[in-house]
Length: 617
Image (tube, rainbow, N blue to C red):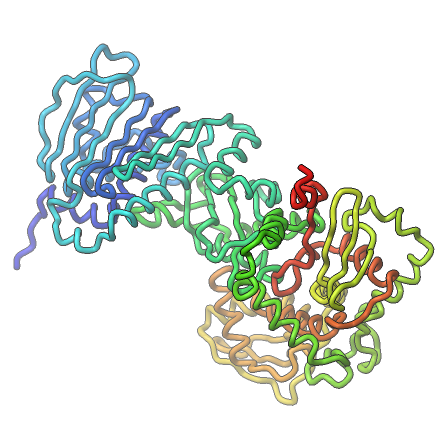
């Protein structure tokens, strides 16, 4: 077939295949246009999941009659100057409207503030009709009917009406968080309506919009994040470790106000929570990154959901560091939903909870805990660290090990003379009893606190181990013969650049020719290790994120295992002084609201809730 020029309609349909994936994609593009026009009110109406009808109405600046023809032409936009790196709007390609018009029946009715009347233009499967007068208020109404009628094969890939409606609702919610001062309404044929009232642009106003989208529980179970590094500003909220979800759908990220689904940001959130959440649970987060538009490329994909940072390591480090600092500064907090679940457990007919869900996980874990009454002996362990004394940093004797009970005994002796009544004003209060040889019952001035002694002490031991890990360079074990790892030259160069950081964790390597590295020492804490796999994993990690988190995570996993075996067992009777010492250590240890596996270490029940159980309120 000879080379020939494609028709304008064919070009637009090809573009539509990249930009318009489903009805939610249409809503996203039209809502972004409304926001770029400085609208304060956006109304969306759909029918048939958006396949039959999508109507978006706004009160923005509008489009003048003489520019309506350009608005539906490819690569015509008012949002982009001559500098492709200076993008300060949500849209900038000039492809959305002509792409939609090429696969659907599109009409645009608009009126500017200075016009006496509105004007309208239509596109039917790529055929543009002349501009004609119309009646309308200030702003723009875009109506899309019979989506994909011109490309019927695309309809086979659409999901059911309910799924498409849910996708559209998610798009509107995701965008609305970044624009709290705009009122959004979404209505469908199922008579369901989403209404997001406008709030002010202050942090409190933004938090109210977040609560509208993510639920009223999130603000009171979240931590504010505000950090800046080298011109990159990070703001937002993340959930406390005991407030989680089964998937990552409630992680919202924004770059210069643009909603994005970026793997680097998602990986940074996961890395920040790596040792405080279970593997199958996910944090809830809303993060806003603000940086110079020239340092981020949003022109990566036609859907504009992906971005590329000039310095990904800086962005990832900022997110991980800010979240971990926020979690540490927040101290010990339990999710408010824990008390709600506890209240529900007291109600008649709630016994089914015992036979499923989280309780099974706790029960099996406790059974494992009780199976070893003698606890973990680091001196006999095959994975014991060499030359470490975790009570005093690093010692000289390999047999010094770590005494899991030393923390309790020392602090309990120090607190023997403190009257229990004086402890009622503390966060976790005064220990009153130990029940079922595992749960400490404590009293504060206005609440009852139940603590899982094993889970709590496991977190305390783990944090002590981590502090010891970072107190100085980790001990390493020298290999009898250096192990040569063949790698692509770029990977070998990246590893060489990070060699000093890796040496701090006990992994010493150096270049060995153009496409290989020689590993001379490995972290003693890892014991026998697959050096080839470890180095290759690190090379991949550095290539993706410019970090060495893979090695840190392995070391943390060993520390977590040691903490689990070295903590106070379920079934051990504690003296009152020991129980109070554990409570005080929890209050002083960041992240102690959850154990190493992400389960809550304590539940607090307010006195008002207890009184409601007995009908006193």
